[in-house]
Amino acid sequence: MSIVICFNNKDPKPWQNALASKLKGVNIEIYPEVEEPEKVTFSLCWKPDKNALSKFSNLKVVQSVGASVEHIIQSQNLSPDCILTRIIDHQLSQDMFEYILAGIMSHLKKLPEYQLDEKQKPWDQKPYKRIDNTRIGILGLGKIGTHVAVKLEQLGFKVKAWSKSEKSVKNILCLHGHDGLSNVLYNTDILINILPLTAETENILNIRHLEQLNKNGYLINVGRGEHLVDSDLLILLNNNHLSGALLDVFRTEPLPIEHPFWQHDKIRITPHIAAITNVDTASDIVVTNYQNLLKGKELINIVSLKKGY
Ligand code: GLV
Image 1 (cartoon, rainbow, N blue to C red):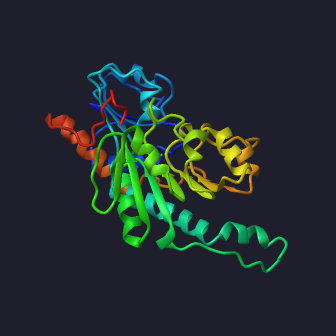
Image 2 (cartoon, protein in one colour):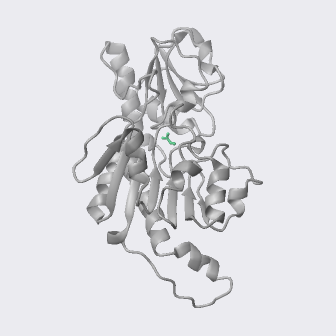
Image 3 (cartoon, rainbow, N blue to C red):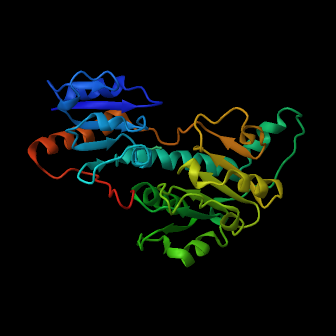
């Protein structure tokens, strides 16, 4: 029984080292140089090459090293009895909250505009908003979305959140379904997208939905690039319906240098760093799952292949 690491855009070495120190004697190989593919029963994946896992005929578990799994579902032809699991880690949720809070506060206090002003030095005092008159809408109430919603509410923001199925979180107005979506967008100043990417959520950040936000609304996208219709965002920024956007995820990553988002004064870009899996804490989850597989126990953080999250 061995483990294979199949990564793109991520260094496999820290994971190999962390697992080797916690799982003494287990063979951990790095794709594509795998000497005995038939011995592989457990794979650790981040954006694996198309059909990379089909080489491993005895594969039982596919573990994403992130909170998301669409990068695996879309690229592999997983058999229905293969177990797909993901990382649910408090550190990941907290990192996401800290990133979002930084984005919100920088927007409310207009820090990006002052940074642009530094070129002309105009000493131009601008009106700013406060936490208690800022209405937040959150799309996605999974583990991360719930953590973010609760933390923002505790700081004094007015928070509404939307999820596919009905949920209930103390002090948060929880909405779901078609009508719930319009309700979460209505009278919202800042929309935060933390949804998983599925066929139903793709392109959800489109003009029809985003124009329901308050005038001068702001978008933070930490879900996936495919949630956002890029050209619709540009229209709403250029006609001043939206005042700006903070984007951490893109349809193509790295974001191509010719993409108009790079040039836009109202768009802040970060290179998919809102919440990076912490190898130290997340490797414990992988170890537990590997050991559970050996012992025939149920794995943790299993994803429904049908639902996609
Ligand atoms: C990051 O994008 C993740 O899926 O954890």
